Amino acid sequence: MKSKGMFITIGAILIVLIGVFVTSLTNADSSESDNETEQAAGESSEQEILTVGILQTTSHPSLDEITAGSIEGLANHGYVDGENIEVVFQNAQGDQNLMNTMAQSLVDEGADLLIGIGTPASQAFANATSEIPIIMGAVSDPVGAGLVESEDVPGTNVTGVKNQAPVEAQLGLMQDILPDAQKVGLLYSSGEDNSRAEGERVTQVLEDMGLEAVTYTVSSTNEIQQMVATLSREVDVIYLPTDNTIASAFDTVVSEADRYDTPLIPTVDLMIAQGGLATVGINQTEMGEEAGRMAAEVLDGQDPSDFPVFVLSEGDILVNQEKADRLGIAFPQSVLDDATIIDNNE
Image 1 (cartoon, rainbow, N blue to C red):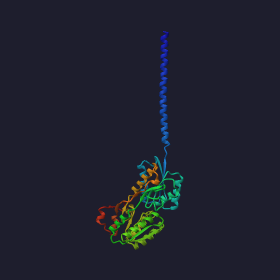
Image 2 (spheres, one colour; image 1 turned 90 degrees about the vertical axis):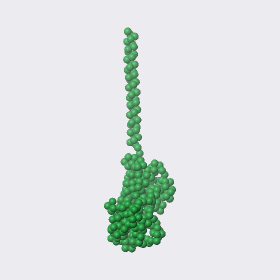
Image 3 (spheres, helix red, strand yellow; image 1 turned 135 degrees about the vertical axis):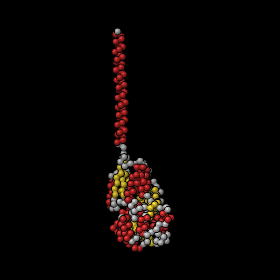
Image 4 (cartoon, rainbow, N blue to C red; image 1 turned 60 degrees about the vertical axis):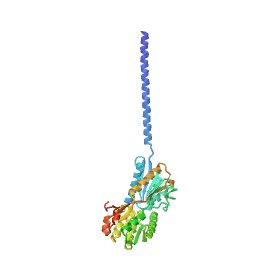
């Protein structure tokens, strides 16, 4: 009986020990799982949020579309505002001093990448830093603007999208629509490197076409109304190169040109709905999306100094039938067959 009692006691002790062992294992597994969960949560909360600074030269629908497209392009390639990047947006409203201040502020605040919407904004960034990568959102002459050494091999901390207007196609369209036009007015800002370069290019193309170029420049929006009035009395049609100053006051350009029944051939597609007659226009949103794509690739590790500038140089034929009717201009059927007709309210 003593032996039997001893066996019972030993069995009970073994059961208790086994229970304690199993409980310890369970608690250990649970503790390890909790630690892993806490560690993962900690790593998630500590995920680096990169800062992307965007500086827009001025307010205008075309530049607004490039900005929106840039943010969309970043998101399409894995960099989403509010998730793994913080987009800090500034708009200088055409004020060069303010633009320089804003650019320096974004640099001083430690942005990881900068996007300049327009040539002046890109230049302001380039003047503020030679270290932080800069993406040009829309620059028509990056070499002439001193932003890159060449379009194939930028050689600096700057790369991005070249907004090269299809000048030959635009002037060819102008000649198809206005075959009797001999004097072509050019109006752009004297303070924008991209505009001057494009104006020189347009002048050469017009000379090659046997047409006369009459050029006027403005230093600010305050001069635009008088300059348009003067040009309209001298020329048959006005061509407007890519220019942020003119774009910001385009309603004034249209209003004054309408007083003299002078047709406008703008470079930017959105200006047709604002009162331009016709153009071969580049999609501004697409331009921004390409800038966003390039920005994402730079954030992924691509060196901007050997990242070739992307050139957008083809566009769609856009015509404003309402403006043509008002001016008594008949679009050739050959133009209408390939064109998109834009309404003033679009």
